[in-house]
Image (tube, rainbow, N blue to C red; front, side):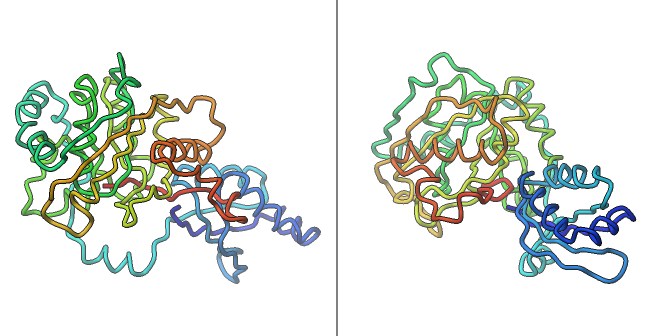
Length: 339
């Protein structure tokens, strides 16, 4: 999960409370963890703030809720800032500017017509050439279903998106866009970013971006569109299902749309990470039944439910069953989008 630096300034009542009951500090820590955060480090400081705490939380909205909840007690005022490692900071300094706003014309009727006309050249011919044979299981789960929905898939290859789109029925495939890492697909001035938005149906997502990035997806759901996203956040080197990030659960719970899991195996043989040219191999796509998260108590619980559904399609153990002792209470995944 993303890390945040939380600066705390005690009120007069807070200083009195801690002076009379030093264990009150531990209670605040436990309260933050009950709200879904994981406290990693905490320091008392001399200066403008009384405490510096490093926590992990699902996203900016989760940290905001924690700050508001604890501040409402009247004993402390919290200010939270996202934190990144120095290596990532150095990488960001060298990074070229990239587009963060979607090309909103991509859902227009003319864009849909162009994308459908170009689908054979962009997607279908490559799947037919390199996915031999290409077997789809579980298509009956989507009989009569037309969206909107969030389609999630495991991520092992740059060939994942063509395979997943080819596995979906036309009534879903014809009205779906793909979340893509902005720094990878929309970051170079030499690349024609409109090409990805038009022919691949992608829209930019900034890694670790916050709740502002929900605006465009939520507008798509309201208009009956579906979104394909990779909740692992990056390609798996081992081929095994990785820990899910929380973004999909947050989106599904807020938009109240179902989540369709699709597990694809064999694509690491077609185009593994680090290989530029694909090669033919057998590929199998398994489509699971749509999952609704209405009634799920928390985002971590929703994330675990979705991850276990993907693991079931992969024939793997549920996450809780394979987590070692001591990890069960930890909030799963790490926030952000993937490509």
